[in-house]
Length: 233
Image 1 (cartoon, rainbow, N blue to C red):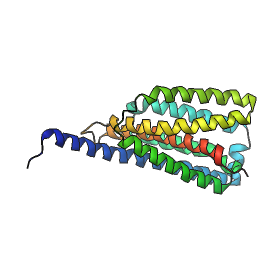
Image 2: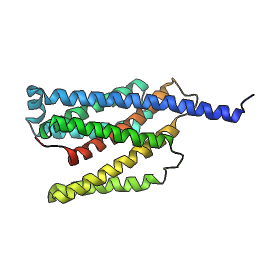
Image 3: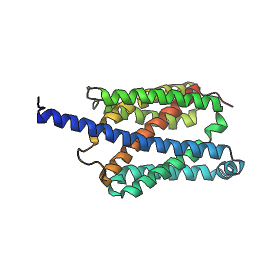
Image 4: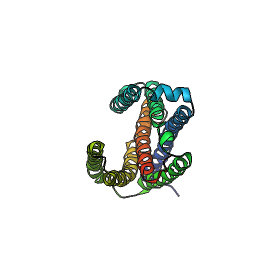
């Protein structure tokens, strides 16, 4: 019995999408690994802690560099070479690890570990949903983006108000938003892949672009959950 060209084509697309998503997850995992290593190393080195947090200007400079780097990478990744894109992504992951080392000062190691595991499970479930669902999640995009802008504004306002209730509301809203973004972004990244592009520089850059998006979803979901579940030192 022969298979129609239509079904051969659909199978080929599905297989390539699967291979592409594996590459995306591999890059994301590598980024998270670098972030975790840098955060743990800085937190357990008195010398590095003093360098990073001994002068209040250093964390500000690092955060500004981190923000500038992620915006540059997100906007220019497809215009870079594949090696440059991967290098900038790893550099950004390392910088994020340096700034996140402060969580080991604020929270207990046990609560950081348990929150990371909860984040990994939640992220994995929602990413799987985004990958497998037949429902078009495009309509989620504008709602989630508006929610993201809302929690950014609320976070800035609460820096001055210092309201515990507002802090909790922002954290719960943030969890819901980044849970939704994980599914939405996974579906969007899956459909971004171009059949026949495997192994090219364009394919690598697309994978890095997707990895950066999911990396940001994971990190932000982790931080929101840590604010709710973390036990302070």
